[in-house]
Length: 431
Ligand code: NAD
Image (tube, rainbow, N blue to C red; front, side, top):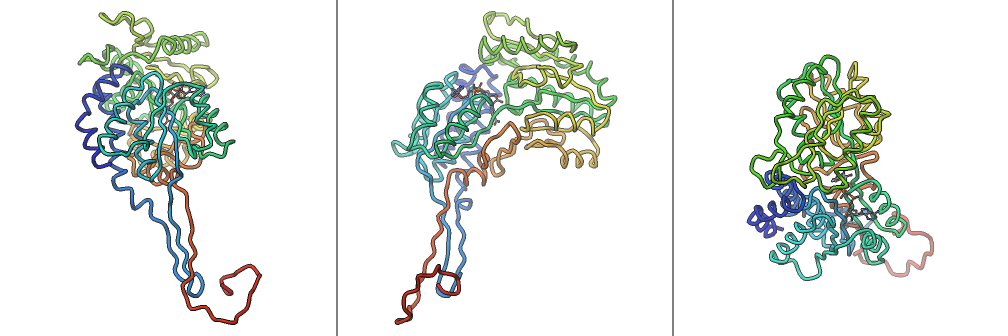
């Protein structure tokens, strides 16, 4: 892992360029994609303490019990398109460092970064057969779910695929950790720092063209903060939509024509149900890239909880805005949503922030932080419909996911002779 992290740093630009070319995000954002994965490789370098077992001497006279964490065997990972480097790196470094072999299925939409990372892993000295890549779509995924040799599956992607894989692989007795869709809310309190908040909302809503599972896709303006909407729209108009490879690009295209059509349909459904389109990026044309699947920053306001554009994850550069009269109302909106990946609040009040942190039902909470993804010594802790399984990705939970516990009870003492055979269940008194 030390060597792998060195090689990833060496090839950072190459990896980022591949991601931009295949996935479309800006080069700067693609560097971030690699960097957030690299952090997991670095974390894996120091993982030994997390693999330590437990030991109790003298559970009975002359008898000690200890536990060790052992690898599971063959594990597998199934990846989405939106982070072609970070998500494979959430998976295989942890699995392999725990002593497992790994079968990685990258997204069929942008598998290049996975291949490059596997080549680096081989160069770093990973023995043949430890990391394997298979390409494909549903049939290959189903084969992974059904394979008797595979003991655990890490999945990241949509709820449709995630719940299918969770059900099918669990029924075969496998461990599954499944990180899925999201609808992350940002609550804006009237006392927030206006300038910093607006910048945070733009970055978290439109960065990566909204194709992040931790994008802040819904804003709940509390009280007078709604008057900031005009400024938000003006700032959004200043963002540059362009091919990710162009140096001035703030946001690149979405992943496919189908994705663009779906996003446009969801925006239109909001308009038809009475939401107001303050900024419409659906018809943006980028000179030189006229066939690109671009959507410019789009802002819908007056959105209500029953609208499809609110209930569905849009996964595009669309901010859906709602209004609440108080923090309680805003919390009710967030907590009634089925997803629980992340939620953030923008405020200068410690008391408000504390109440939010305590009462919000989201797994990753931001206080004046728009995308609160923790570093890998914590875990990625989405909850509710955003996660299925018991053990989260990376951190201590990640190590627990990729290991199983064995307990050993040993006796080293001079046994009294002539004490006879006892067929009764051993107890600590009689051992
Ligand atoms: P996706 O579910 O379409 O694809 C993910 C993987 O599942 C791919 O490898 C694909 O080949 C496979 N797959 C898709 N449909 C399948 C099916 N019916 N049967 C078997 N396998 C299937 O997801 P995507 O569009 O690539 O990624 C976007 C989604 O991922 C969004 O919902 C986003 O929120 C989510 N995501 C979640 C997190 C998180 O940590 N919670 C992180 C990144 C992305």
